Every structure is written in structure tokens, then in C-alpha cells.
Image (cartoon, rainbow, N blue to C red):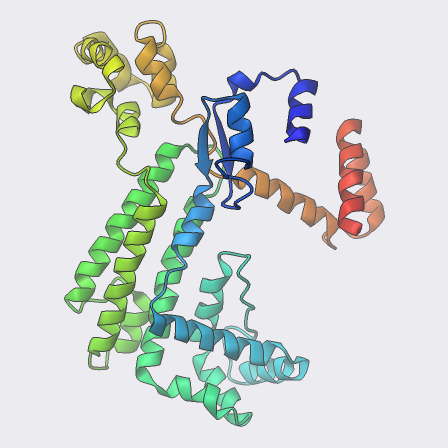
Length: 368
């Protein structure tokens, strides 16, 4: 907090102009008494505190019923067995080459990288025949036995499909130039998809899951897999609703289309102004011809209270994406992506001197 305050003082920034702060879920960041958000709120009481949407999505996606969790743990054990030995890795690669497999290597799973779980499971599913042959040659009967169980393979196929959907959602929450409106739309659509998938799964219809449909097309439907899918989809929906209470809030509805909001649904000090606003045909014409980001600044002179309330909603950052992408760029500079250290010095020395000194300090910390 001292460093941030020094930056604000040096750049002559006013704390009262701050509209929001976005952090991850570390207790030191959103703590109500001594956390980062609390310290910022002491200097700027009107801020909107946001827990990063991407981080929340990753937390909500972790929920898995016990049987599906066991399948995931077995997959990780199988991958670790092959990848932990250089000899096993070479033998498995040679086997995949001889079998004309599309892939030649497995992928490691790391909890830090949120997309890796789905990629690891998908690679094992695609190479399941090669994995079975390899484990059989290695006489690893305990690990190999899983591939002989149809229900285990069905659950593996479902994990491939649902992790793929969760990874797609994660990617949609990344990128630049987006606001809380697009994020809420994306999350609302995903929650409705979960409800639709659950309804179909209860009817025994798995066409929305490509991998699961492929492995069950010539097999009788096992009631166990249907129960697992329904249970998991229900848990996912509950977790997403818990982690994203913004969905369905009146404030966002007022911002998106104030002409559809009931007067009784807004706070008392805005109701009279909202009545005048909703009966202003000129404002309606401007709303239909403008985007939300263009419309509300135009209303500041005529309806300042409603416009101020609505302008505060989309301004705060909803994710720490820009911050983390900056760290990723720095890490990329510190790796072997550049041909040699001289190239790194050349790139950094061409930047503005103040930034160059800062990067030098960061380089020293990384080296230590």
C-alpha cells in the first residue's frame, strides 16, 4: 500500500477519483479489516471492490463428485508415471510413433495453470489405446486396469467434454476491451447451458458431449454415468451462482436498459428521476441510437443521478487479466525466447529510462 501511495503522489493522482479495485482471492487482498481492499477503501470510500472473474471461474470449476475426482487423480498418476522417467518418455514416444498416433507426448498437469487440467485429460483420452499398450508392456497392471473398465472410460470422456467447455469459458473471460456487461452475459449463458445439459442428461441424452457420445454410441447406457453427470452439472451450477452474485442484479439491468426497469426496483432517491427518464421520448431515441458507453455520458446533464449510478458499474476492472498478461510478458523476456542476453539488453535499453531502471530491479529480484 505504501508503494501504491507513492505512485499516486508522484503521478498526482487523486484517490477520490478511483472507482474500483480488482484483486485475486488471496486473504491479504480482499481482507475486510487489514487487506488491500480495506486499505484502499479507507482512502476512497466509494470504490467498488471486485474479485477477479477469471479467478472465481477457476475456483467454481474445481468442484467434482468423488467418482470423477478419482478418475482425474488416476489420470494424473498415469501421466506422472510416464513423464517422471526420461526412459519411459522416450519409450512412450517411440510407441506412439510406431502406432502412427496423432500425438507423441503426454502433458503435465499443474494447478497453477488453469487450462492445463482439461488439456491433460484430453491428451490421455486421445492416447488411451497407446497408454494401455504401454502400461501393459511395463506390467503396471494397477494403472492399466482402469482402461479396461467401461464406466471409467465413460467418466474420462465426460471429463474431457466438460473441461473443454470450462476452458472455452475461461478463454472468453480473457482479452482486452471488455466490460462487466459482456462477462455477465457470458456467465449467464454458461449457467443456462448447464441447466440445459442437466435436463438432457436426465433424459439419457448426451449428444452435447462429443467424446462421451462417441464411446457410448455402441454401448448400453449405464445409469451410473448419467447420475455422475447430473450430479456434477448440478454442483457446477450451484458453485457458479455462489461465486457470481452479480448475475441478475438490478444495477446492471438499470445500466443496460433503464426503460425496462420497474421504478420500485431502484433505490428511493432515484425513483422520481427514473420516472421522468422513462417518459422522455428524446432519451429513448438517443438510447436506441447509441451504445451504452456513449449513452450514459450524454445523460449526465439531464439525469445526473441515474447517469452517475450507471456509469460507475462498467468502469472498474472485472479481472486482473491486464496485470497478469504484463507479468507473462516479463517472464517471456526472461526466458530463452530471445536468442541471448545481449538481445534482452538491447530491447530493454530502447525503452524509456524510468521503465528501464524498474525492469533492472525486477531482473535482480528474479535472479535472486
